Length: 139
Image (cartoon, rainbow, N blue to C red; front, side, top):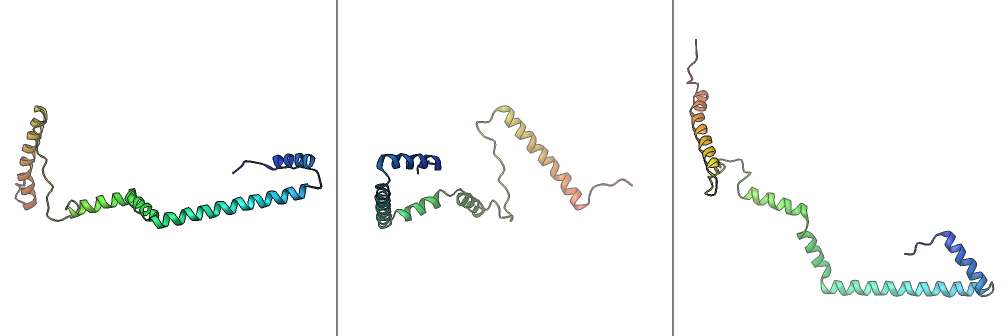
């Protein structure tokens, strides 16, 4: 709370000894201790009353719900679960969708997409012949 070191406390004690006097100093420290104890009790009572009011209002439940909604780990897991439910990670016979040429794509993009499609079609018969073993082999 206060950043008071031993040297500061020593200076305060010496000044209090000089100002109050040695006879009244113990009584002053006793009153000071009683005052700080009473202030701490009041602060504890206030804190407990505020926590009790918050519990009655359901603030802790809302706080728990908000923390659960804002949890980045949970959001990432939900996204993965949703993607898996859509079939993106099933590993089954589902084929990935072929990208469609966008209507907004420029002529160079459309030309490149057409060339790639032709190259893919040309590579299919070569791949099929090597899989079946019908490729001509030189003796």
